[in-house]
Length: 133
Image 1: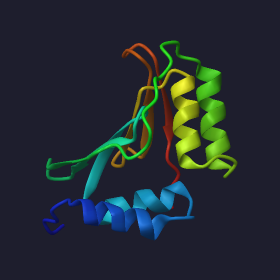
Image 2 (image 1 turned 90 degrees about the vertical axis):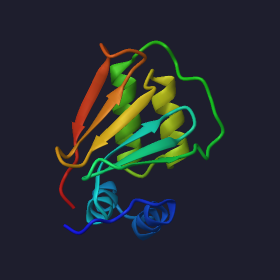
Image 3 (image 1 turned 180 degrees about the vertical axis):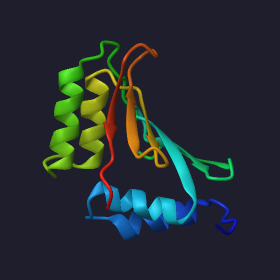
């Protein structure tokens, strides 16, 4: 794979190409530009992308900040994910629902094809596989 430097423009381009498509298509587009994983801060949508070469790109949060709950509620986490997957909620609503269920961060591992939703401390997390696009 050729060296591709991660830039805001490259990430935004992948987001635009994926708009309105299922999440696995976004994952496919990120992998195509050399993204290995990314982490999202639920409270404000701050993202840290890591390339397959270990380079990091931090994109500042672009949504109004809110407080995430300190109590991890697994069933509410699963319900928020399901509503978003079914197109019932938009992404900002999805983040707010995750935060209300005690999720503070999630990590999309594009090599392992899974998303790890993390609560207020490392004891509490929920993992879900990403289907292939």
